[in-house]
Amino acid sequence: MRCPFCAHEDSQVKDSRPTEDGAAIRRRRQCEACGARFTTFERIQLRELTVLKSEDRRQPFERDKLLRSIEVACRKRGIAPARIEQLVSGIQRQLETQGDPEIQSSHIGALVMDALKGLDSVAYIRFASVYKDFREAKDFEDFAGNVSEAGRG
Image 1 (cartoon, rainbow, N blue to C red):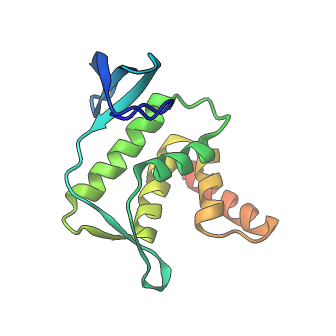
Image 2: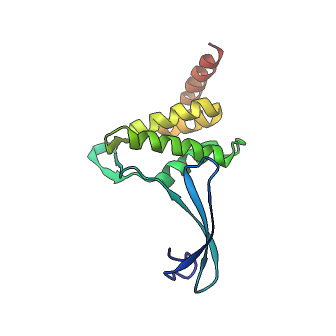
């Protein structure tokens, strides 16, 4: 594993343990050249996924991009990082096991919406504002009103 500090090719694993949800192995490493320590995560990847964007554009699925978008929606909501990791791992697992290696970006967005709806209503609305491309305050009001009504039903 290449050192992120000095770019040396070799590092030693000092400690390995599973993450809380068991979906990855956390490894503490030390660079043999500069002595810096850093952490890596090893995850199971069932298949290579391709995201189908608008206008038939394709790009490789990036777990970190999915994680970042959910973290932004959950910012300052008191949601444990481990819970967010678990949510992302669950979505990735769903995508990898559904059979088709090419996935519409809208399908990924819908999975995130479903997951956030059950986790936190504010994070759900934040994510929806980007996913559904809210243009004005009324869009937020209408959507939040629907969320509130659904919660009462």
